[in-house]
Length: 128
Image 1 (cartoon, rainbow, N blue to C red):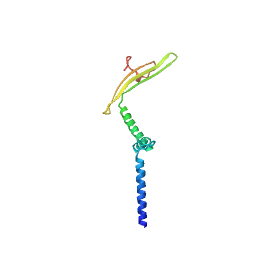
Image 2 (image 1 turned 90 degrees about the vertical axis):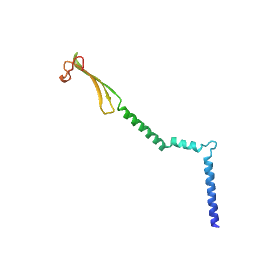
Image 3 (image 1 turned 45 degrees about the vertical axis):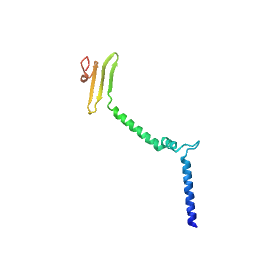
Image 4 (image 1 turned 45 degrees about the horizontal axis):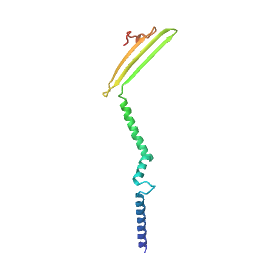
């Protein structure tokens, strides 16, 4: 008697499980299908979002690494004038181009003038 009752309970629970699963898998009006539900989970679940952010961070690291090989233009202007006296006027401009071999190609132009210019910074009048 008890075994028959136990079998009936198992059968009933199995039938209810199958009924609820089939009910969940079938699309109904007003409820998303299982595919739509999984798409929502992929789109809005915090772990899925974190995975997307990690992928974006990796792409930004690659972009930063590629940026290390961009040419660099630079310039510097340093001057001092006091009571109509030009103490010094130092100008420098250039470009640096890094290469994949690790060598940096660099070209600069320097023009320095002034009455109180450091002798180390003296260059020809056309620039150096």
